[in-house]
Amino acid sequence: MRPAGDGDVGAVAAFLHERMNARIPAETWRILLDYPFRPPEVERGWLVEDGAKVVGFMGTIYSDRPTSLGPRRFCDLSSWYLAAAYRGTGIGDELLQAGMAQPGVTYQTMTARRATGRKIRALGFAILDDARSLFRPGETEEGLRPIRDPAEIRERLTAEERRMLDDHHGLDIHHAVVENGAGRGTWLVWQRKLKGAGVAYHDVLHASNYDFLSAHAAGIASLVCVGETAVLSIDRRMMNVGDDPGTIETIPLPRWYRSIDVDPRDVGHLYSEVLLLDQKLP
Image (cartoon, rainbow, N blue to C red; front, side):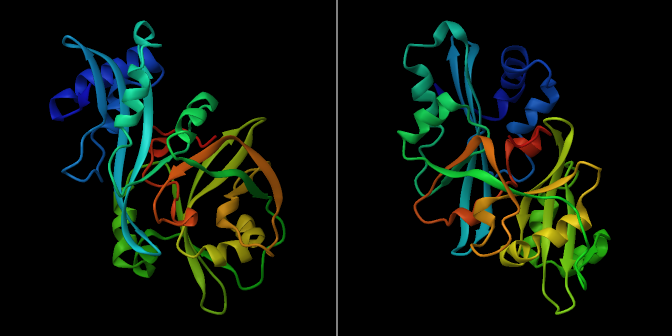
């Protein structure tokens, strides 16, 4: 077992395509090891080899993000897979632990299966969220308006937010600045994916002002949701107690995180495998 480097990208991408999910092309899998916002000094994941053959991999997607405490390094754990012949030997657990061994890093995973959840709980992870608030579009809120023009959005962002915007250029996500007549507002980033019985979930990935999002969630749903069965979906940690909770729905697979100081609300859905692979949040 060793950290993956520059020369391993092709072999790991082929392994994940052939063994983990053939519906995802190898070229798409490569993005997990060669993403645009990767800090240059970090590994490209961890791999297990038998001779010169890749038989296991654990993705580690690093990012440096602003938080309420200042800049922090995050790591989204991704694509933990070991070939069947090597399971039950303890190698899989060693691979998992290797991927989360950096001190001071906030680790997260938004797609962990239940068995993985049990393993990472024993390694100090806690549930980040297991429920979300759903808001269906209804009457518009007076004074609330969306700004969708990319140039206008960029003008309203801070330098750090512009970097975040650029980090996600070309990905299938949506942006708007939502403002009210009092001069307050939020930069909102969301993903639109069909789930279940064709419901168009507009999953909030990030908001620059969660207090504003929470207070105006129903009105924002009317502005950004597209489709007859559309809902605005907001993880519960992004909502304030006392605001309209909408319809509360259990998340099929809980989100998990481990951090020594980062507030749960600072753990968003940007910088993750879900967006890099163009998947949907559970």
